[in-house]
Length: 70
Image 1 (spheres, one colour):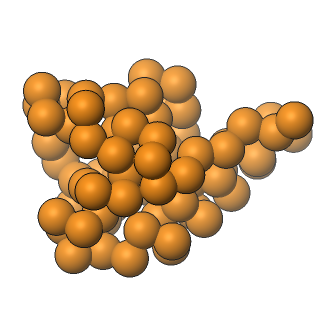
Image 2 (cartoon, helix red, strand yellow):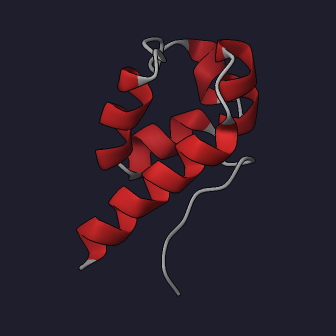
């Protein structure tokens, strides 16, 4: 089964497990990836706070995860 993130995946988990996703998150303005609240915040919640459609972010992160796996 391929690895994927979804809206409920915690931002802290994404940062720890998918370093290729950090660039995506930084490019959309999530510069607080190391702050304590990001460790327990879902990707969907973080996107909502930043006013960004989570579906687009999830798709781009999963695209990069898939590219790394090849």
